[in-house]
Image (cartoon, rainbow, N blue to C red; front, side):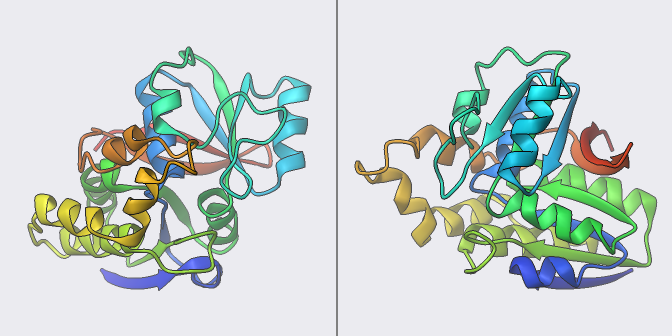
Length: 230
């Protein structure tokens, strides 16, 4: 198995084979929480208007995510695992739009054969599913801040997943500690950013806590994420 490490939106566009799109803070931690709460599916979109249209058409019961970090008008939840942790989403299809994660999935899915939306909470399950499938090529993409700037949490998650795919047993506690000491983690302690809950950070650092991967497939022209167990 060949494993390529890429970063940011340009890296997502270069994805080939099986693509693993990483967004730890917060998109794909939030998606994992939604599935843990019983969500049926999540439609992944890059454009805000597309998300709003799908909700209006009834294709999705709720919209969640962000634009420039904030929940836009017309959305039901922000890009927050803490908010989704108490949401009544069981059996429902949701639509998600974010500035890095969902944009990266759309870019990666254009040229990849299979796509996963990953974070630290789903890292081991994602690696296990991919290892069982045994693709020849895996592209792991750390999406970073808005797909433009590299961030510690996504880069560390990328290395962690690569290590497991290579048959190693990387120290998950060490990964969590490295991320916690990074610049992005400190943003959750900033009182001028009340939409960044400290609980979001804490939930995102529960490494390997979710027993499924999040796979994205095309269904009727839409990119649809669903949980997949190893």
